[in-house]
Length: 380
Image (cartoon, rainbow, N blue to C red):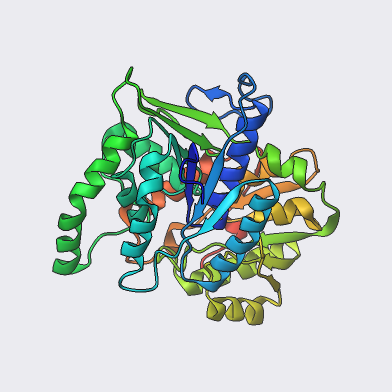
């Protein structure tokens, strides 16, 4: 334990941990440059002056699903190889687990001079933020949700994930009411008044725009990943990238299966890289319907693709990887293509934000090839 570690990071997913490593690498090598509104590809912003080594302690708050936990353990090993201290802290899976975790972390949270978080929407992270005294708060990417986080804080809105449709009846509304003070404190942490001593930084590969005045956006161009792995050996085929849009209740499972089958036929794909949250039943149905080889990566896709072998073309639905893979695979000759989600694929329970948000993920993707909508027709 290092209670006085100047920088304390909280991560709940493999991608968050990867982006903490990218931030620490940029901090050490002096590659952090401010991005006025939207990260630019290519040359990017001007580098900052070299920074002192980061005294980084990473606290992993693992979810309960086995795939995420396995990837997190692999990423934790890479973090230790980089010289960072990693603490595995169970905060789920039992009635008293959150309370025990909060008690174990409270002293260190109060002592930290800088706090790095991967998911500003996480209720547990928001609860920890009520204890934070640090003047520096850093948010690293948790995927495309970063786009919504920056937009919501700029508008002064309540932090709500884009795919959440609300509901839950009276019990859900009562839980929201009880949690409201914690959520309000988190919003204040993320929106300090301009010119004050506290600062908020977003370290992102996402095309975020118009942050609030006290927020600095800095570019994550996956420099650590490119320095640590690859370049990959390229195969002649096409790889498909899976998504958890079915699992989050946004896309109908039958329509999704039909879309994947159409894409596989159109592009001659042979492999399907599954998202860590895709269910075994869904993946079994995909394999039987398409004949694709289902690959369950043991690390985030950015690292898997950079290590190779990987197809010369990677096809994805609107998701984080259409923004991150062009950075991670820069200079390798790999083409990243994105297929729009047809509005007819959305479920009745999909939030009203879902259609516009998914379209925005596609519209703002750079250095990718956009596939025509008819490449993946809806079922029925």
